[in-house]
Length: 543
Ligand code: SGN
Ligand code: CA
Image (cartoon, rainbow, N blue to C red):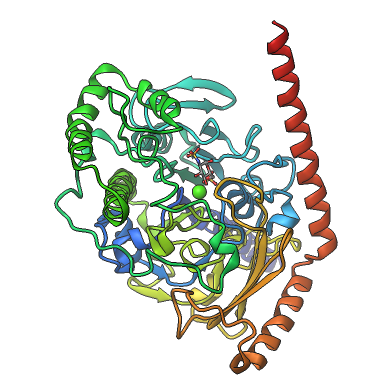
């Protein structure tokens, strides 16, 4: 009898022990997650996407060792709303951050808070562009607002700190320091490594000046777009030819002040941030270009082409530093043996126009800015060289990370984990995406709009102080030059898309009433700002 008791207790103990071990192993198995994001990095400027503009070997490595997403999209193509959508897993009208102006509420739930609660060590480094102290992070070191390319100011755990050097490299150095020396190595980690580059004004690092000077860049074939049938697009203020500033954007800051620019003062202040050694190298590169530009007295189409050429060269050179940083991080992960258990994602807050439709900037629901690059590796689950063509949106990152971390996905997150589609279980995956854009009137003059995109079609509604519809067949017209709305051949498709738009708005709980609420809030903010401006003016005139 005693012997039997002994055996039973023995079995019970060993079961308990092995289940404890399993639990421990399960914990150890939680993957590290590195979420790399850059700002305004169009997929056209990542060599893995095959556009042959530039060479980004390190970013490409992520796709070569994992997956390249061909249909990655954002929910609202602008910086702060895009970041809010990624953190919360919700569309802008749900998380409240609809534009770059209305404040973000950090008190709401976010993916970092959830991971932190589940035992993750969390860090946010670089650009976040959401005012207020970041919540959900053990360590944060973020740029103030948009940040500066040279000798940038950061806020480290709530305290201001100035760094010497080039912003992209500084952000990488802070990240490497955290990953090597600061984090608790007994915990899985969630790292948001977010570059400011290649945001306007595309100031390259000194060592990358001239990287693309020997390459000839052809204008995109719709560079001289006349926007026929597209009323909203006609009102843009993002033309490379018409709106790009020679001095502010294209660095023609001549000492003689002969080149005309309404933004010379702002250009000068960016230049003034550099120290004398940095300025000497900067001048050694740009001064001969300024001299040559002045001598050529370009006009019309020749000037348009010159502007595009300077823009694309600066933009791509700025990306080289982003790629360097990714390389440094990937090498470290590999050297430390962390590769197998680390998920690495590369994305941008949205895409960007590199001369398509004659533009720079983003905001529109047209492909170049609605789409965003997504590359992801996780050797445990994703086969190298995977091409993923499912419709993915930035609201999906938060639930996807929680899924991989084995943490419950809150019911009110609107995005969905795309882990199952990467694992080949695609059956129920969505067939359409919903998009919203609110920042009107704002920089670059893009009308308020929303719309739906399926694999083949896109329906857009421009509204607020207009009421225009656009419909595109992306198979026949991938560059979105022919608005088919009202075309008798598309009556049925148009009807279907209208119905789909209605139902997707219902699904995500958007409505005209919600929109009206934001319009009022926006107008109120505007009034307050104007009043504050007026008060400052009155005060200064009294002095
Ligand atoms: C700045 C830029 C704009 C840009 C917005 C938003 N002008 O206002 O070109 O669209 O930021 O960019 S600048 O002259 O100040 O550079 S975002 O990435 O933050 O959304
Ligand atoms: Ca951006």
